[in-house]
Length: 200
Image (cartoon, rainbow, N blue to C red; front, side, top):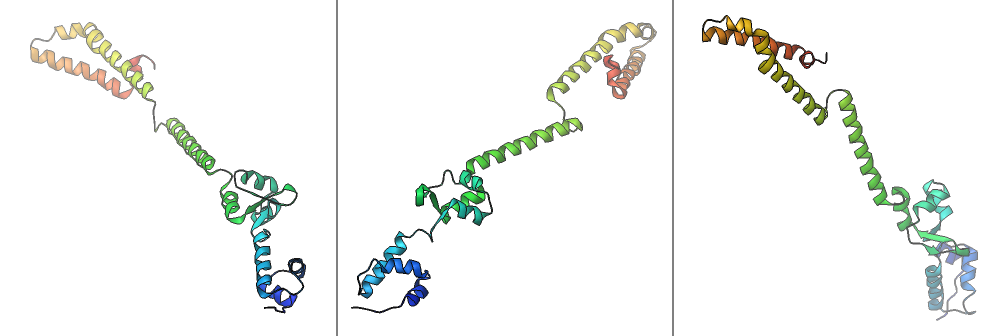
């Protein structure tokens, strides 16, 4: 079966320009059948990558990025050979890489590092603002306080107050006097414990 169809009609049906349609028609015999015509255009559509694949320059314009950034981000994306050895990419493969960056695992690693840095900065800030203290510093300070208390209560107390304690006539008087004198030590501890440590 033979058919007659104009280039204008073919352009309307395919959305291609006259030059492209003429190139397809040049591959046909002088009186092609409708089947020959359809087969030629299907074959040309299949072979044609212009509508499906994009060059680095086209993707750069499309994404609003410079070519170097596009090339870098598409490094691990599968490409198709183009004219003169150029690489061409399908939009479905290229767009996610252009939007998200070159390597999603690297992006995740960077995000984790940023979070860790933020936590560390917060710890330093809290320490500076005295909201957080170093465990070892607290442990050392507490040990010094207990040593000072031991010195004051177990050793110095009896030496300093032996005369007063000796005047007590009963156990009750001794207990009351001891309590009053030791209360002064603990008052000093509450008011300014560094004085108790001898560091103030």
